[in-house]
Picture 1: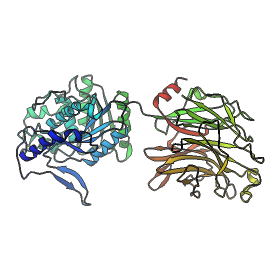
Picture 2: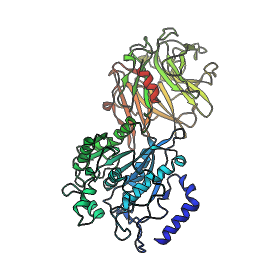
Picture 3: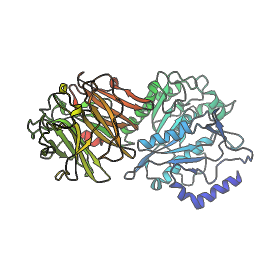
Picture 4: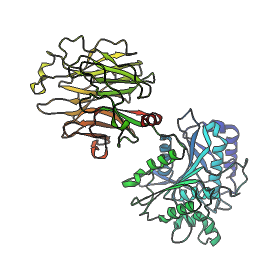
Length: 597
């Protein structure tokens, strides 16, 4: 232990600055560990399951912080110390540590996994305070290094799972305990605490026996039991708290969370508690049933308490009826529940084209920061409509772009879409057209002779356009293409319009370049119904494709899974009468402005 302390001192003297900036690296918590006892044969060891996976850490002698910095450069970030559980006998550092840190990073929170010392008389002069010493120093370490880690010193919290929840609640109620000599006496009080199926009490009948014995010993005095029963230590200065527990927890009774919540309520400390019917103990970020929802609920709680900014949302542009009244917009926070804006009235009345319609509105955010929209203006015109906006409320003068005027036999220009090509800093506009005399092998009188293919043009400024070209010829009547960037290439979602034999479904094609060539169309990803107008977004890294079940007069969706496409139509809701358009991700401030209209 003396040699270890000397090595740590050298690290602090010569290498601490470089370690601070090392993402996902562990840094030592102490220069000299307080209250430590040399024990040469007492060494950290892993817990390994029957498959050879390391699932926990035992015998921690040298506390560390593992750094997971959020990728937000323009603002001071909220940070959280993560305390994995494990009955104070081991640390479940993956499930309740690193994975949790990665989730926090995904919502813009910097995270620090605390590998705290596990109570032991072999290496500690007073094992009851060893973990708390580490937790206090972890908070102080973050506050000392707010500039280097880009942290907000007033937004530093703690989260704990199971016995780690006991440590987090202990810090939240014992942050002022003088248990070691701090180099700067900085505050160790967390600004918030998040307690997940936590051990709170040391009282018999409610405590977790293993955690209690490991921390306090088998013959703890009534004074020590009361001291570390943290529901008894809550006062009006206890940090605001978010609690999660399952009613059927057979290891740590749900009353631990309930009693802590009641103590917070009694002392007028803001608190939110989520009790789930099932989930047992140790479900981490959620495994099944309703407990999988707690991270989203926690994110909303952090937003409501101004620890993180309101998350981006989604806006859906659509038309109703024949498109005669113009642009309709709806919004969603999660991509599932959609609510109309402006009481489902039009944001923009159509003014251009033969029939002055606004069908199939497609909106994207361009490289210039503006929202660009194209739409179908008529059933039989040779061009499309175009307008731009900075806020989705105030639009530029509408323009008619005659993209098929050069084709004497062009019958229509339907469902235009735009994709921004970042590599070439230009926009590709594409649509479906029937040109009489072309692709006659797939012409069907059942479709009134319509026999579409996808055409395109490119532009940098929506004033000059390249010569129109054929983009996609899949060997069948195709409409409603939408193209998005993914990985190193592009994916096209499209409608197979074939009626005999009937298709009327959504398929996919791929290309390394936006302008193609695109692969052969995939098998259908939609079911036994007629679908059109696909629009897609990625939710939690997986594609969700929405479409108009136009014969059923309702909207549907499928979601990408590891084993294929899952129909989630029953889990989404759209305004009544919605016809197809485009979904885009937008800042929360944009939605807030739209709500005021």
